[in-house]
Amino acid sequence: MQIKSKKNIIDHFNKGIKKNLFIGVENEKFLFEEKSNKRASYNKVRQTLEILKKNFNWKEVKEDENLIGLKLGGKSISLEPGNQIELAGDKLENIHQVCSESYTFQNQLEKICKEIGLKTLSVGYDPFSNIDDVPNNPKQRYKVMTVEMPKDGELSLNMMYQTSGTQINLDYLSEDDFKKKFKLISYLTPLSIAVFANSPIIENKPSGYLSYRAKVWQKTSRGGLPKIFLENMDFEKYADYVINLPLLFILKGNQHIFSKKKTFKDFMNAKIQEVNDNLPTLRDLEIHLSTIFTEVRLKNYLEIRSLDACEWDCDCAGPAFFTGLVYGKLNEALDVIKNWKIDDVLNAYLEAPSKGLKTEIGGKSISYWGKIFLNLSKEGLISRNYLNSKGNNETIFLKNVENIIKKNKTKAEETLEDLK
Image (cartoon, rainbow, N blue to C red; front, side, top):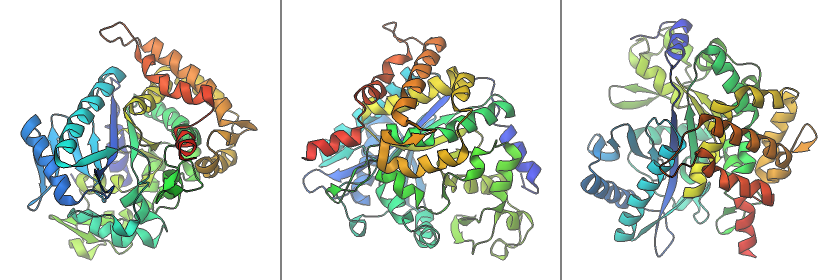
């Protein structure tokens, strides 16, 4: 399929409309040498993937002759630029399944890491390494990104090589449903950064931030929280945003080539000589959508991308929190933010990495707002009524958020206290 017009892009978003709502979670984590705290090399990570394949029946994903990931059913494992390992989970119905999937993979991974002298660490930013000491891997797209990204974002390489996050993927039932969900998720980005802050350390010292990862992403090319995202987004507006954004790279055959600042609009107008002035395909569109690094993102599902990576209990809490709100109490949550001013949200977005729960929106702290949204999320999960074998609903996975709100203390602040 060729992408000839904005309508083709809007059609792609319309094809994302679902009858049933699913949840997908992507968790990144660092791998370190057990004894030295040095980041794991590509050879070590490749060994890890090979053992996962052998022991648990994953299937290889290769680029040229290089092993760069694994697949199993609807799940995949991929490598980030600095050999962070990412599990992109299956489309699942409830948080019980999401949490079980995460726990199973973590258990498998830790056993293998112990066997070969590695350890895992789930935090938002590498607390040990200088960026010059972080190894890379042979994935072609990262070679282009390493050259291109720093041109428009001073901390882009730090984002690529030194951050890990949790991404929550959620569905929409119609364009109107998308509009509501996109608005809520965008407005709650400062709260998401603050509540799930878990990256206060860089190079073994306090960074001055509770979520240094979030700070880095604010200084990343093609990233941030654009003001337009807070202005009643719809499919056409997002398509306009996509069309006018420069391409990061173009895939020609199996080769990633520089786009020379050409936009997707140029591509649709057959003005890119490097691909013989051919029109973009659906694959080209999907690649372009995946190289937008904003805090909220649309493919043909919604992506929430503002949470620091954290350990297993917290892995479950973030997806549970947003599932309860977005799938369970959407209109009620929108009612809470109806008087929030866009400039206040944007200001809170900039302040949240350092101020955390003390960040204010509308004259009240995120700690205050957090209690309101936590209660709504809990009500939403209760109304969903997904029970496990013990008869517990999905609210059991909110304990991590409950502790943060109750203590008024993030995981990042607990980490800093432990350093004293």
